[in-house]
Picture 1 (cartoon, helix red, strand yellow):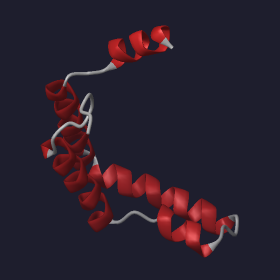
Picture 2 (cartoon, helix red, strand yellow):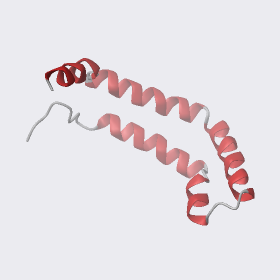
Picture 3 (cartoon, one colour):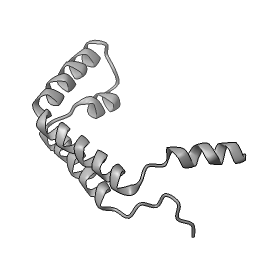
Picture 4 (tube, helix red, strand yellow):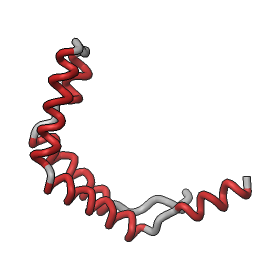
Length: 88
């Protein structure tokens, strides 16, 4: 158990670095938004062709609003307090 805790401590990133990574991911998605939507459309059409269920199809289909929601979510996550290491 001590070894696991030691390994876990080594893999914890500091809050500033984690937030920076989240913001970089959001910026990259925003920059490549049209590409993300195009690839999603290909996946959707393939799934449709394979007669995938409607509940899965609705999750596969990304449009500009869903992508923007992802970007906003990542940015909002970066604004939250980091709960790592906190106890109640």
